Length: 391
Image: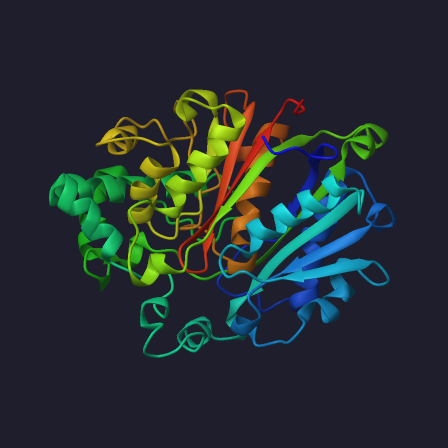
């Protein structure tokens, strides 16, 4: 692992309810829901917080420097603060920055907040205007692409690939049904896998509406603390072991021999001494913008070959009760408040280690958990958490 000045742990997390529209609250009020829950979870007050990190996609709500307004809901008035935006990876970048700031000794306790209130802006308008209309055309569809689906189909055949993708989507919905905060809780049934996919409106190629993440309103707050503060607070920690960020601009335009998902996993596992991630990691909260990418990326993140990832889905290994649970929360296809989405992955992984996930807590003991973020030009952020304090 990377050398640190001191160990850092997640000691509290909170989330608002995720929904397509949160018209009953404004942005500070929605953020306040998550902050209050995180403070209560950690048994802290705002007086214990040294610094507030804030992240969202400003171009989606079209509110400049929203963190200045949001002090009404997050309690950041008079405290140190940093505002971050890195696209869909924003939430994961917040987690990495919080870890770095505490590990460096600059701050002892950090409150990281990710949010999005997408009903108040225009996500598609923001994406289509963020790049040059000629050179950046590939960027302007965001996560909406049928190429991931076609890749899996070309390799494993249409029937098997389509069933695997829809089964993955159905498993994510089964998990979301256990998560009271999740946005899309559809009660999908396995006996209707083929019919559900066939009857869903097509988006691009074999990518259909049912496969794709939606846009959600919601906020997530996570509290990071130094080892000394963990002891002083007598906290229930999930320790940050390491994290890796891989971004390559040419990935979108010219293609790449190795995905950023596999590159990030290789680097992270090499530093952590992980030889067999399926056996040495207990759970994965993956940023899966669509069911097709979930199927494809599972192979890259776990450094699998051939059809091993498809078999994991076909054999129910990725369910909450399975050998390697993936997204017990329901994942991104269930809830996608973009600026918070990747932070939710980190929060959910930490909750599983800390045993605070409620109805969607996995039955086995989680000693190591992994969380990923996705965004930018196919950027990947990967974070490893542990029940045991790193040496």
